[in-house]
Length: 329
Length: 251
Image 1 (spheres, rainbow over the protein chains, first blue to last red):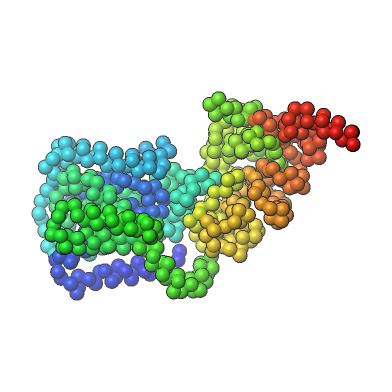
Image 2 (image 1 turned 45 degrees about the vertical axis):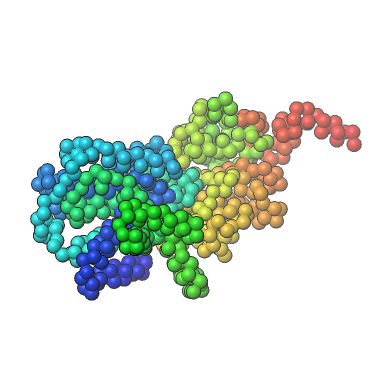
């Protein structure tokens, strides 16, 4: 294990953790919370899509399952909020494993996989909008009960540190995947599934592992969403907005990189807010901005912001980078 | 009998109306280089796909190291020591040469550092050690063929299936590659190869099977096989052997 690889994560998380100590504006903290929420969901998408090459259009299925499980277990079954949060992550991971088992075992790849994940998310959205347990069209309100025991905080900073801790775990897990045999196999499956199989990689199992980790991260974002806004309904939980944003963040930030989703989430949330400031709250304008940014990134920087940063870095320090690579070998 | 590593018994494969492989039988002796030759479309690559678990035969069975492995998926065969290369090279284009080979090494080595170390040793064996950090996408055809070989070799195979690793190489590249293949055999790896480059087949193979229209039409030592009229006719058409013989007399 190369511990030095974790230093950038420690540095970034430590820097982010200091922000509430210097800024106590609720607007800024609220903005950062939503950006980190998106980072978490995007990191989930990145594990499966960025490292594994399996492009999902339906991460709402996992996000929404986490959100609903957290809300339902607390409000209908009286479970403690922390336990409900953990159960929500597990439920999301379970849905991920189930969808993965169905799609990967039947050999769905590429756009077929993307369409099927979209369909699963839509089916869940329709079920959630009529089923009594989810509150049908009304949704579920989580009872206001401020206190650490109920995982509700009056200060934005506490929520901010909670989501930052979750993001930190996701960053570390992603780096662990990157440095492990599982990660090498996952990337091999992305690059060429047949060649990977010839080298002894059980592609189905590797993809199943990836979708389970991926779904757990997206579900954690959903659990946090429910706890933060204390309200879940079908269009929020299973709506296409989160599927789209969860893939935009890593694609714009840099697919298959540890910090890509964080960079992308900060960038698109900033641009979205800026668009709203300029035009006053025109509905859907942030989506137009996302679309333009996506086109620009795909056309000019297919490896995202992280790719641009890496290219500049390599240009500034070419010899050192090469020797570090040889040492790692 | 005991040193027979692979036995293909009456294997057939039908794709709809096309009978790609028809009742093919052959055996591969451990520690030797066995070649499969035949005209284009003879079913050689399909036969490899059947043996390596990428296709399931519609008839017959395949015995590998004494056990029936018919229809066993490719990754499980790889774990049992059967590795293959692809005729159309399949590099992991987004990865470096070293990372490509390390995927193979990971089959038996869990640790990242150990797998990378093993990969660089294999790279040395096939002559890729000077471009370890280069992206696989930038390799020449010869480099990609070597990379195919290196990746398969990194899985520590007992049986190595080489699907035209010399095709597309120029004569000097072939001269470089032949000793590498021989060195792999010297390390105790059994090799079964599909090859069109006859000069290399003649110098490398100890036993040759000739496939035509999905069927094994001849087998034997290299010198016997190339003189076999059935083989000449499979390549050049009916009556070609007689015409060749007649032409020789005429001169």
